[in-house]
Length: 271
Length: 346
Figure (tube, rainbow over the protein chains, first blue to last red):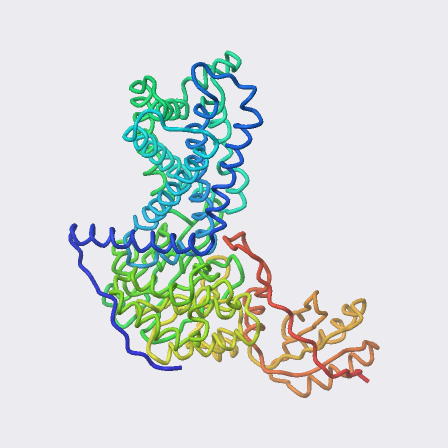
C-alpha cells in the first residue's frame, strides 16, 4: 500500500451565509450524481415515458371514441390529463431511489458526513424535477403527433407545463416521505404509491366527471388532481381558469407545508 | 470527567438505547486510545451496530455519553462528523457511477475543490488497488472491490476515527484477507479504528483490544491473549461423523471436561476444555472413545480460540442469532472445512 498525503477536508465554523452556500453546492453535487445515474441508465427515463405514451395511444384510439366531450375533441381533453398523471407518477422514481439508498446504506454514509443535511433531499427533488420536465416535454411532442394542439397561446402553454411540474414536485415530496418512511424498496414498489391510482383516475384526467356515479362525483369534484388538471386544461385549450388555478395553488401549498417537513423528518430519523 | 477522556479517541460511558421492547444497549462503557484498533465482538443483535450508529451520529442514545475526539456525539454532531469515517455492513456506493466518480463526489461533499477531490480520488484508487477499474461503473465490480471502494469512500475526508461495521461480511476468503491488509495498514498509519465484527478470527487478527458484546452489555474486555487466557488451558476437539453417536462421544469425554462439552449440531464437532492436562487428556479421550466404540474424525488438541472464549462467556456461539436487529440479510459464515485426515479412535 502506498502512503498518501492528501489535502485535509476543510474544517469550518460556519456562519449562516457559508452554510447556505455549502447547502447549495451540496445540493448541486447530489443533483449531478442523480442526473449521471439517469444518463447511465436510460431505461429509467424510457420507462417513465413509455407508460404515458401507451396511455396516450390507448385513450386516443381505443377508449377515446366512446368518450364524447362537449365542445372539443377527446385528444384535446386527454393530453393535459395524461401530462398531469405523468407528473404525479414521476414521483415513483423519487420514492424508489430514496428507499434504495436507505437500504444500501448510502443515506447512512451521507448522514455521517459533514455535508448539508438538506442536500440529499433537495438534490433528489431537483434532479427528479429535471427528469419530470423532460418526460412532460416528450409527452407533449407525442401529443402533437396524435393531433393535440395548444390553442390558448404560448404563455398559458408554458404556464400549463410549469403547473404540471410544480404539481409533480409536490407529489414527489409525498413520495420522498413515503419512500423514507417505508424504507424498503420492494414494499415501495408494491404499495408506496398505490394511492395515486384512485387519485388520478377518479378525477377529470381521462373522462368528464359527469359520467361518474353521484357518490364518486362528490370525491372527484373536490380533490386536488381535478383542480390541477382542470387548470392545466384551461391553460392549454382555453376556458375559465381562475377558480381551478387558485384551488390548485392552495392545495399545492398545503401539500408542501405538510409533506416537506415530514420528508425532512423521515430523512433525519432514517434508520 | 472530561479530563478522563484525554488521549482517548472514543470514550463511551453508560450508553443506553431501547427500541420499543428491545433493550439494544444496556449501559456500555468503552475507552479507545488514539491510534489503536478496538474489536467489538458479538453475535447478531448484541448491540454492535446500535453502538456504531450512535457514535457516528446516526442515532440518538437514550442515556449515557459518547465522545469522539473530544466532541460529544449528541451536542456537537457536526464536529464529530468532520473527524469520522463510516463503512457499514453493505457497500454504500452508487453502482451506476464509476469508482472514480463515487470518490470524487464524496470528496465534493467533504467540500474539497474539484481538483483536490480528483486528486484525493486518484490517490485512494491507487491505495485500494482500483486503478484499472476506476472508469468502470461500480456495478461491474466484484463484491470485494465494492467493499474496497466503500472503505476508500469512508477515508476521503481523512478521518481520525474510522468505524467499520462488519467490513468483511459476505466476502470470499481471499477478499477478506485483502480487506484485513488494508485495515492493518490504516491502523499502522495512526488511524483509530473501531471494528465491529462477529468473526472471532477477524478481531483476533486486527484488534489491539477486544470487547465482547452480548445482549447490549460488555461482558468481557482485554487483548485476544488475555481473553483466551480467561478460559485457560487447551481444547480437545473432534468430529463424530455418525450423528447418532454424538451423545455417546460426549458421555465418554465428559469426565475430562472442565465445563460442559460443546456440541455444534450443524457439523457434529465436539469441543472439550481440558485445562492444563493437555496430552494426558488426549490419551484419556482416545481410550474413552475407543471403549465406547465411537468413530471420530480429526481428534486434536489445540490452543483455545476466541470462539471458545465466546462460548465460555456467553454459553452460545457467535453465529447464533440474538435479538431481532436491523440486519438486512442473513450472514452466516460457512463452517470451517472438516479436518482432512480420517482417524479411528482405536
